[in-house]
Image (cartoon, rainbow, N blue to C red):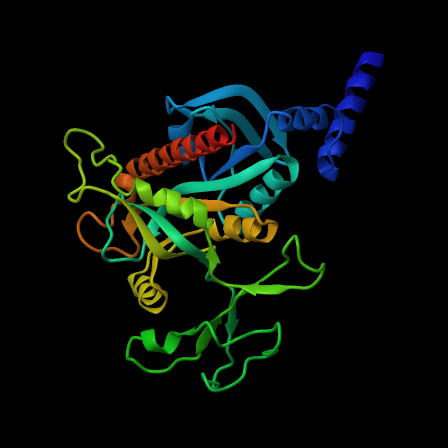
Length: 347
């Protein structure tokens, strides 16, 4: 009877530690021990089908260390002898931001890599291409304008640190069946309020386009001739060989975009190529914490449909996921080589 009571109390205490979100006991010791072997590259991955190709990659060597905390599983290992931490961030901007902040808070992280698949808004790109966007935005923070008001009318709370008309707007009336106005009017795109770690507490800044790390970007451009997968099997191949390409902009929203009209708007208005649901969450946290980051997104479909091959996300998503892993692993190889060369110069 005493043993049963003891086990119940122990389980209760452990569950309370997890529920409060504080580090205690064995978890705290594991984190402290792990950090002695850092710093790490942090790899944030949306889903298991995008993580599995990396777990099975011959260049990834698991250390067998796993730390479970706050619903996340942090996996430790090395890629080309570079210490890495893998975590599945899950779908959507909130999940991506939470996973990123947890990783940066718990562990010694020198830089962040986010990879996976994405929809495509750029008609000049193809399925399987891996995009390296120079800038990321969250494009679903809107001010929805009152019916009857137009671009010349101020928005509520417009002004210093408030809403703005500078970024642009989408007029729903432009997409009505008869070309007539409708009650939905306009939505104005808004910047995020960010709190930089080196800024004044409770003093916000505005950020819409978040640039990736300039050094990471420069290094990644050397991957543009990298050979990628173009066939799923002997009978199913892409009509255009995929490539690694640097693009100006990518965007995220808690929206699965499969609509050609909105896809065309995003490309025409903002010159956006990859469209997905997580990268901006990672970007915004890294930007505020002043941690270098870069994102590799492999295109799985032309959002909203296009040619015979460009609306085949179900068919080619696995291939695209594999290509994003190929680029990620090769980038870490380059990053490790550059680090080793810098060490040699110091001696």
